[in-house]
Amino acid sequence: MEPRQVPRTTPPPCPVPVERRRELRRGLRVEVDLETVDGLDFVGHTLDMSPSGLCIEAGAPLKEGDRVLVHLRIPGAGRPLCVQARVVWSRDLANGLQVAGLSVVGMAPEDAAVLRQYLQEDVA
Image (cartoon, rainbow, N blue to C red):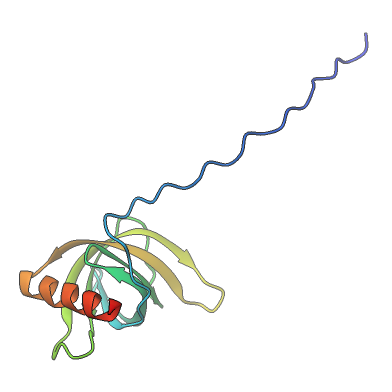
């Protein structure tokens, strides 16, 4: 008995990714100091940010679920803004750095106001 050939079907098209961010992120490069719960300190910069999240590039060994403290050096703010965040995803880059998506889990109201104002001013 010969094996039966199963007809090939065209795979369904890939679904369009759904944007899950709560707010639109702005592609802004701002220097950051990053502290991990292990007490490690790293310097990096943002690739994009919003009041509820940011994407950073740094030499930090981050993994999904890690909690970090980010000090954003917003131009004109006078002092770094302190942001408590959770790592949502991370990827290693070929140059030894890592890029990671962070979700903001805590920020002082005055720091949040400065960040929102900076993001709105940059739009204009």
